Image (tube, rainbow, N blue to C red; front, side, top):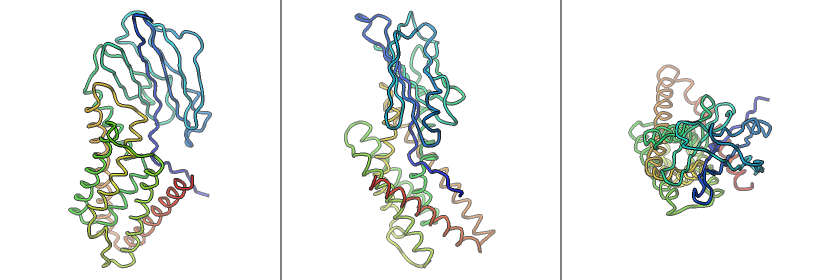
Length: 323
């Protein structure tokens, strides 16, 4: 009766992109493309409410082409623009709920500009020159949001803290996790490696189930030295490699600004790490408070949390393996 959907890796933002065509053969012509995700939270009916917003000196030529994909509504239109576009706005008419969006401006003779759109500011102002600080800020926020709202990655971190408990051991395990997911995130984003998304997502779910089982065993026998308890950094590093592929897949949905790829990757990864450290600090504080002020509630609370994590991870694992 109280069931609510829990969405993992829900980083499929709305995207709108303006790409300049060859000015010699098509002077003033741009291609506008947009993607409006359809999610279980908003429903298929919510996405059509948003429409693209074009710069004031541009107008749409002909009828836009729209089509539906399994998880998004896609659109494409040709624009005729007059004069310089710096200072003019483009983006979407609105963003549903608290969702984010990405706007990209792709001129032929200058670097790509990328902007983060929010429900409060669904349009972006085109700059005369790209701003690296803006790229760093936007991709940092996107990375932090991904770890905070991507529940599969979040549950792995939570289960790791519940199992290890020792502050120094948690720090070492979290560092190993960060190093591992940074390796595969950067390597995949730069095109050096990659794995299909389905087995990656299944391994991420398996990592959650594995840690939940380990926590349950320790709750039953506090003196039991499980493999993860003995070498938490190794387990975190191994599964962190697969989580990095998951981060890279999410980042691929957004895209990286040409000319600022290194800055965007760095900011995204630092954002992920900041979100991860925030979760670890908050959870460690809660556990310390429960241990000190409500010791009789510690074991029952941990057991409820552990089985909730294990059940959720098991569902995701079955769903991702069976389809």
